[in-house]
Length: 151
Image (tube, rainbow, N blue to C red; front, side, top):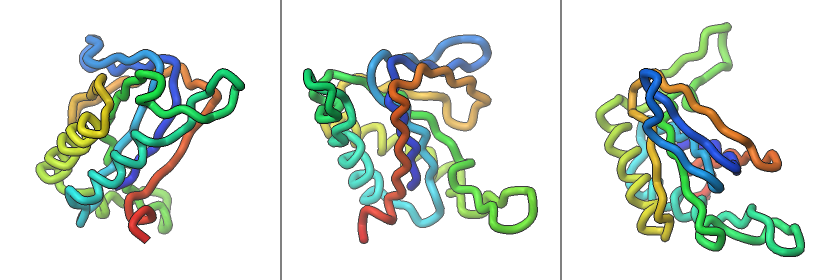
């Protein structure tokens, strides 16, 4: 699994001109599920993200986690994170998991975020054409690959 995490002041996702998910302070998470990913990777990745200390404390140091600030997450499925751009000009998406298993792991990842103490979990619509808006805070943007966490 690959995740792009953006610290946001606010974020929302729109499908068919209707807002279906919205958060204030927290993380916008773009989540890519690859072939071979499993529930263990979702657990490890969600725990890592929930515990990231990238929110500022009273001394303006990045020292607080999502739980510390009562922040929410907006999780957007994004198979394009699995792209292989090494050859040619058209990315290959062969590394992306099939939609049925990707959806299952996407949903499980969201459940894991909740079990890691995150109360507000908003979602996009899996497989839909989504319009994502955000007000990046910092900017703070992190990229985490679950395969790197298990090394």
